[in-house]
Length: 252
Image 1 (spheres, rainbow, N blue to C red):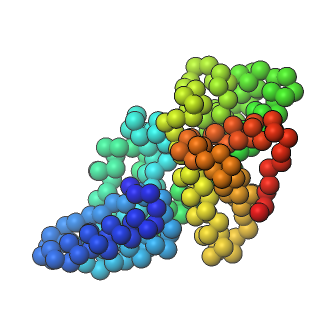
Image 2: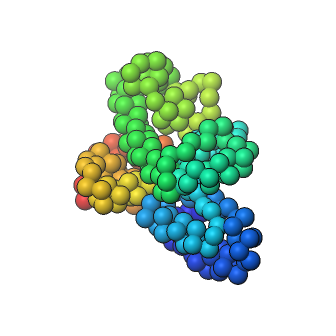
Image 3: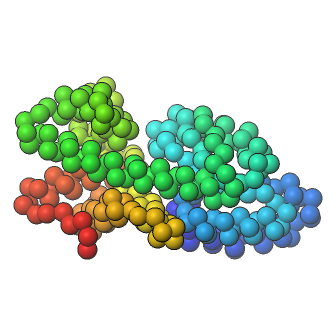
């Protein structure tokens, strides 16, 4: 699992592929590559094609579940590849996760992950907005979170990753640790960028996704310290922006 597309290209082109090409054919055919990076779908398919050309097998297997899921071994793996490659990968992936989902051919796991994180990225912003608004209306964060989480607004961004300290008394989201130990804002910005890029290629409208990408970019530009903090720290960005009397720009 690497940061993004450039690192995957480098690792495979400079290390994995040359090694596979030097292996006896039987050893190459016995090799399975599993890449859990969230990267560009086109790059992933190109790399998988190069790996398969050596006789080896490869799946893209990005994860969902965050740091908490990784520690607990409850991650979901979203797998793209042939049925044979998927079946070979299952015994390995089940050691790290609970749900191993075959999404389709090469690149499909990444497509599913990008779509999932598109939803998550947008939801985390609107949860931050609603929690901030609620407090300005005099609502206790724990009461408001309880209402949202038991109503139609309920979602992971509120029930597990709520951005307001004390909003989830029986849980320990990153906001209780100064937004440390979660999914970095810089990584969410990268994933939102992947979503907008693939939407451009597919000709699919993405109005909320583009607005969310721009907001995460503003978070990092205006408050660089939040780049490595959990992406729920977008709440802090909105809070400080409101205190300074500024407005959040939806477009550049």
